[in-house]
Length: 192
Image 1 (cartoon, rainbow, N blue to C red):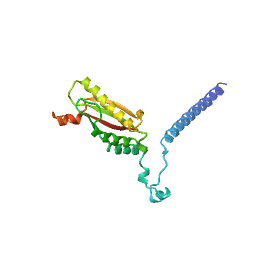
Image 2 (image 1 turned 90 degrees about the vertical axis):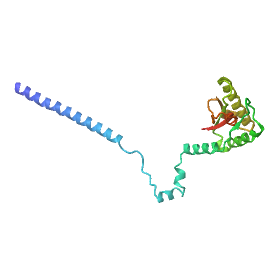
Image 3 (image 1 turned 30 degrees about the vertical axis):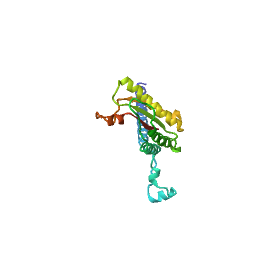
Image 4 (image 1 turned 30 degrees about the horizontal axis):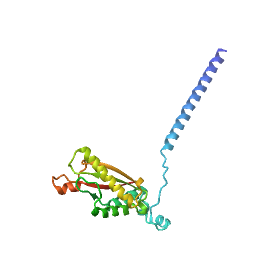
């Protein structure tokens, strides 16, 4: 009986060792399979040859490669390249008669059908004369006057935001009247 008992112990021990080894091998194989499947390429290869271009109906591949964000940025750049700055007299915020053409031009740009989804930020600026608080308030009045003029030309009010930079955003820093006149302005930024 002792021999049978030892023989039984040897057989069961080998059985458990083999089972344990099978678990280790199977677990290792499963982990390796998961790791390797994570490395596979999911993007199909695209044939950019001339034959593939013909299959696209003869469309120019460079036109197709421009993303929506690139087209939007191109539209914004195009509009901003044509937008005109509105200038103000010293200590004033009303739109001068000679600046009405700039308002008309800007309103025409902002009212284009392709620009309807874009927003406009009007930035009011001042020269260095006056306190910071006064110039901030004056810059805001200038921005609001420009916004109101655009709204009268048909630009939707909810597309326009106003901000004042007071005297903190000069385009010219010379100590001359001509320089001060350049800083009394409303600028227009086009936003997506």
